Image (tube, rainbow, N blue to C red; front, side, top):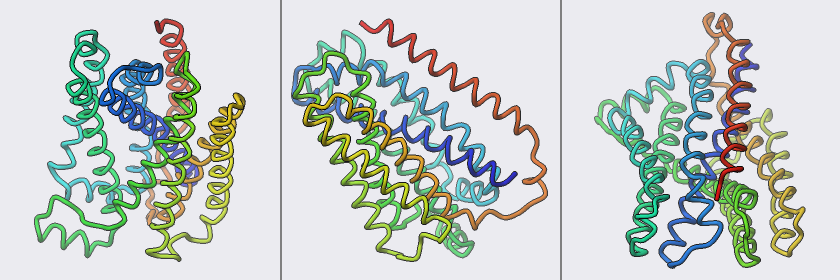
Amino acid sequence: MTSSYVILLVLTFAAHKLLVGFVLGAAAWATVRALRGGDDPVAYASRDWLPFALGAAITAGVAPLLLIQVLYQHRVYTATLLLSHRFMAIVPALIAGFYLLYLAKTERVAAWPRLRRAAVTGTALAAFLFVAWTWIEEHTLAAASPEVWVAHYRDQALVHRDVTIAQRLVVWLGLAAAAFATGAGWLARGVSERDRRGLARVGLAGLVVAAAGAALLASGDPDDVPAVGMPYLVVAAVGLVAAAAGFVMWHAGVARARALATTGVVVLYVAVSALREARRVHRIEWRPTLEGAQGFPLFLAFVVIAVVVIVWCARLVSRNVR
């Protein structure tokens, strides 16, 4: 049963991070485009899909959050309590970001000067980056030793300082750029050759940044990846190469290369998520409540229902986009 929960955690977390990556990238693209003035199909599609994408990302994040609590129970609870009110600040940050994304779609904001328009999506982007940093910080603290927890509590610190937090954030931001490039490539209509090349460059640059962040993270502890995680490292490398090849071919004008880039990015996200759990799976402590947890078939059924509903909503919105 424990292995089933770990597999579900990897798959649901990868889906959640793909959606989060699109949200971050779309908010960044819309902000930069507003600063430059004017508009383009990618920026328009980004603003149009951002509220839906954020809602889907938050919804998709519920499953991995529950699974993490089941598997790493007291570690997650301890880290959350130690970070205290600053961790709870992610709720108002998400609410503010959510409403700002809806505000960015209005005709009134579209008539604002470019700096004010950029401030709307830029503030939302800053809120989402704060949430991303805080979640990575929480998971890093949860994986720390009890001695670190004692020191954190003794110092009454609200911030857990660890050099790997920034390195992990770099990896996920790089992957976010790749996820956005592929997502926008499918959603934006009437994309010019210039914008298509721009998306391909963004995706390729994101892969480079993610690889550099991963190398920097691995250099701190070369033995940090256990033997059980080596197959996932190989799969991640294959996904990285496939995605990079897809972006290069897409930049050159090969239309079908977009599907190759998308497949590579999805494989990369799943492999990185599996590698993430392989590095900390040894911290799962066996408990009778873990093996005897009930409701697995019901949980699986609701996962299928949620996926079907989200896909149906996406198709409904896509058919009615102006």
